[in-house]
Length: 82
Image 1 (spheres, rainbow, N blue to C red):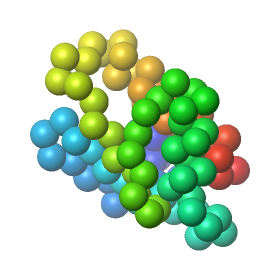
Image 2 (cartoon, helix red, strand yellow):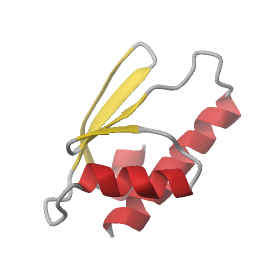
Image 3 (cartoon, one colour):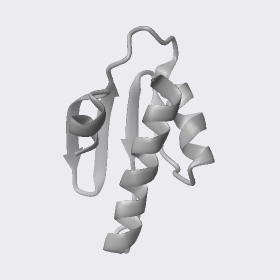
Image 4 (cartoon, rainbow, N blue to C red):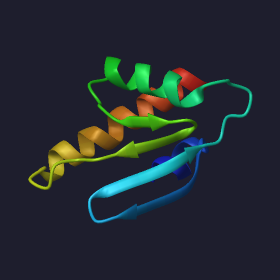
């Protein structure tokens, strides 16, 4: 959903509870770091590796917490890359 709303993510994939997506913002150097820093300001902890971001949520996460993670990620992407 985040990829569809923002147009900033491609190659979304996951295995188990781990998810990853490539950032589609070639105009920014170190886009992963920019998104990571913005995510922290929105209360989201994710893992940047180059221009790929990873989410590693705990298995005991509630639906509301997962929705908050998605919302914070979308806000961080928009703030960092638009």
